[in-house]
Length: 568
Ligand SMILES: Cc1cc2nc3c(=O)[nH]c(=O)nc-3n(C[C@H](O)[C@H](O)[C@H](O)COP(=O)(O)OP(=O)(O)OC[C@H]3O[C@@H](n4cnc5c(N)ncnc54)[C@H](O)[C@@H]3O)c2cc1C
Image (cartoon, rainbow, N blue to C red; front, side, top):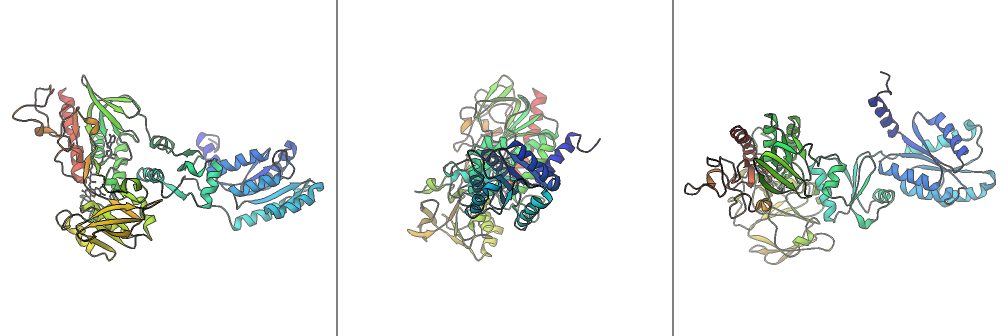
């Protein structure tokens, strides 16, 4: 097949064309416009993409689109005398979007004086007299000079997802966190940077509507919801079918473990995750105690591999889908999403894990996402290089985060309510913290208040060692205790007094099976009080809160799924 005729070849040719810098000509006279474009293509068509527009407004539309797609514009030629928007007005607006593009005015002889005056007003590089025949003498030397000037200081093409936002906006943080945790590469632009201003102008969006996400295809999403974002960056949000052998709710280590074993053992498996696969483990900067990784592994790396492994075996993964209901309909188990959609399966594995409890102190809720974060929020590390960082918590997660942020921040302080770290943190982590000069541990200390206008600026510390002291702080990361994600299961499955789901022998009291239990057997290990619904990982009552045990329980739950399917 001839290259360029098949779909792939045509697409490659289009991609190659789009990678070229653009040479834009704007003229309202169609015959002149065609002639300019023809002459330009003849000489520059190999290396540049020649684009033409019939008015200033159309030219700006083209430039806005090119800006959003992250493409480069090397040269802009505009006719001086155009109705509605003159060439000068157009070039002035073009400069706002592509300040590095070289600019020239096309003028008739009679307009020369006005055009020359304009050179000083809008910093036009050249003016070209019409007609320019022969182009070898009158057009190309001028364009050559402009191209040479452009090549000395070109724009970098940016064909990637861009996020324009405010550093102190909670929603901007959530968008960045969502993209990072779903392994979508993006470029962050603070709204005050000149390039951000150009992009907002191109997208015709105001600073009060942030964050704006610009896809590589050039679409601008204004303050998108997680589902809109997921759709735009190509994460699936709709199931391929409406009935599965197994639906796994939650994409942390337990859910991913279940998905890998379920799909690899031939079950039609769907994994539903409300945020990003990886769960808590995905936020861990370094997991040192997972079997097979003597040098430790970042949680994001480990869970990204698990996600790919699950997909390789045929698991379907839905992201940004919050499961809010579960019921039995005969032998089927029906799940409801937060947008009302329903989906059914023979069996369900609940692996919804836990999240951190909220820190209760004045100012904390208002500043969450604007300096106060739950978990280690690794995307924030780059902002910590000249600010003191505080962490609350005395368990391993807080210790790991302290080690991680100590690489970026001048000073990291761990605030611990208890008398010592030994009771709650692994020995190896305590040793690591002791070896770091910029990490300080303050025992018997709590956050009494968080304050700041735009974002967090300081903390008031209370407790034996901190009694009412105010300290400047740019970041506060909170790691205090866990709350299971089971509110949606109230009245559906049995839970303990803290909300963790009871399973197996825990459900049988004095030989009595749970209320409404129909099978002629006791609930199996990891089975909830609703037959065919199994539970794995941190969300299970009395489970060991570790990555390895979560993965193990996910795998074990799949064995029980097989047993259940075989028996029913
Ligand atoms: C910072 C940090 C460091 C840690 N370090 C270590 C370590 O070094 N070693 C170790 O062994 N353990 C470590 N842990 C603990 C370990 O990460 C957890 O034990 C493990 O992640 C539990 O896995 P899980 O799948 O049960 O739950 P989670 O990881 O909590 O995952 C649950 C998932 O379910 C999703 N979900 C919740 N509700 C719903 C719903 N209704 N619908 C759809 N999806 C839902 C959540 O978004 C989440 O992705 C650490 C934890 C943290 C936070």
